[in-house]
Amino acid sequence: MINVKDWMRPGVKLKRWMFFGIFGVLLIAFGFTELVTRRVYDIYYKIFYICLNLTGIFVIYISVTEMIKSIVALTSKGYVKLSLDSRKMESLIYEKRLLVKGPKIVVIGGGTGLSTMLRGLKYYTSNITAIVTVGDDGGGSGDLRDDLGMLPPGDIRNCILALADTEPLMEELLQYRFPDGRLKNQSFGNLFLAAMNGVSENFEDAIQKMSSVLAVTGKVLPVTLDDMKLVAKLENGSIVEGESQIPNEVINQKSKIKKLMINPKDARALEESLKALREADAIVMGPGSLYTSIVPNLLVKDIVENIKKSDAIKIYICNIMTQPGETDNFSVSDHVKILQKYGGRNIVDYVIANRGDIPKVVKEKYLEDSSQLVELDRKELKALGVEAIEATLAKTEKAYVKHDTEYLAEVLVDTIMEKKLLYDRKKIIEYMYLSQRIKEKEKKRKNK
Image 1 (cartoon, one colour):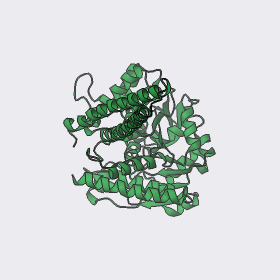
Image 2: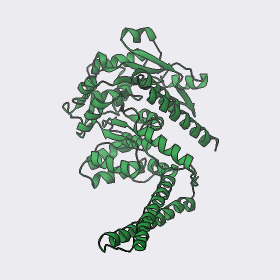
Image 3: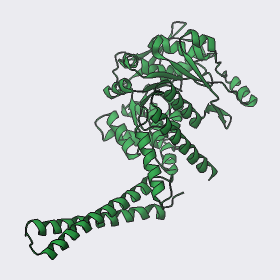
Image 4: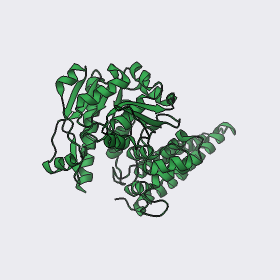
């Protein structure tokens, strides 16, 4: 932990070195002025003013070097100690340079699954664009949507925090939910984004401002600025409106989703999102709710068209467990078939799927809620023209199953490097180094 006293010390040093640099500039200005404008002819005066200029240059060099050290100490957030030496400086700057040169990855989805993956991915590249669904109409996000007429902030807030370089206390504050009163169950982060939306031109601008405040790696974008809502037609012919109602009605009516739609049907995607898709090295869909987090993005105008035009490899990260009311009894290939239904056959090149098991007690608990492990059916995937990337991704915490954040990011980046960037040997060597450095840091942090 970095206490306030330690954190402030580099800030004080930064100011001192800035003034020292200004002193160097004054030395150069004075010496140069005397040499040029007054045309001093005495050789000793000339030598003196030349030395004055050289001294000024040296002072500026020292001040800039020390200011860089102070800035890095302020922004490192504990990754390096405040007493930086040249090797640590060089290592940190090299890592930052690698992240900037990292693969361009566009992730599409929503919900907690997407933000979980982003937490690990930001340590491998800073070229991340998260395109997030705005169909949510339940919980605190739904309340703000109804009360303020704004797009739902919940999924976007989670993605911003996942990519942010913040202290644990700040993240805890933004995720805090009020326990009672008129703000009961409302997240402070949602209110923060709502307030930012009130002082911004539009929701996209509000997201960018909040991202700047929290030093976000990459970009978080809503899939559309239109007031998009989900509509599902069930197999029994009934129409269900609202993201929060669809799974419940599927269960209540015992009828599966036949077709998913959005209202308005001509909702347009942000141009910045489309540009990111066209320039991406990899386009990643998931993890997250298939019908309510991933497919809605594919229904927004021009999204599928630009995915198909892109030279990026298309990767789907399949959920570990089936979701009641959406993917009951679905296998991995069933998930892919739905994506192909709404995005076409070439919407997915590779699917990253879990091949590991979970504890029996946890499995039985999920069965009580009509949820089970998603079956990995390799032959069916091959028939669909999709290659399976298998890994033990399941992680159990407090009887809940989710993806292992760090390992998922590693598998994803390895897949991109192997399938897309294999020709670039230098980049692979750099990422091997970066990956090892990140693992060492995470290990040290956990040991603390």
